[in-house]
Image 1 (tube, rainbow, N blue to C red):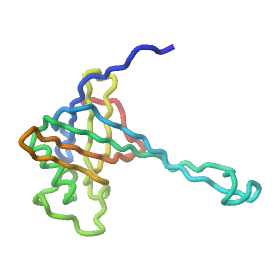
Image 2 (image 1 turned 90 degrees about the vertical axis):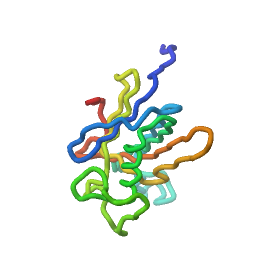
Image 3 (image 1 turned 90 degrees about the horizontal axis):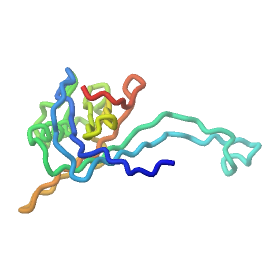
Image 4 (image 1 turned 30 degrees about the horizontal axis):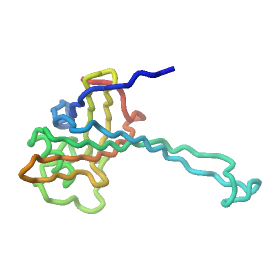
Amino acid sequence: MAQIPQVSGPAEILINTGAAGALASLGWTAEGVDITAEALRLDVPGDQNGGSDGVPIEIQDFGAMFRVRMELTKWEKTVGDKLKALFNGVTGSGGYSTTALGAVNTPGTLMVSNAAYFRLLIKPTDTAEAVNFKCAILKDSPWEINLSSKYSRFALTATCYPLNGVIWDRSTT
């Protein structure tokens, strides 16, 4: 019976800096990272169980995606600005956009086809708990920042998708 508290330790957030995949440290989380798995499944109704109002006769699996929420009080501003620009524009060659901060994508732009995603490595002190997402996109409420006389917080929400059949692994390099 497991009765030992699990402590992964402080988590450093690393992201790729372009198509070559070189990692750069974005910073350290303030209260850890929240990772939520979302299975994509659909009920299949059947007449023998009452049709669409009855118990499904099967469940169809369409894969999964993960939502990752990070809040940092210590971050590298230049790396953070690259992420903010990536939300606003894409580059066809992979990695970050050269679009100015505050510009917007052309409506209809494809994010994965244009390599407008990044690699996201969450590397806690206990590296056996590292999570390396292959394809992270700043999608829903992607980033927020508070600017104040106290201390600033930079919060990011990435949605992570499978790339070549793999969403994440334990790689730290």
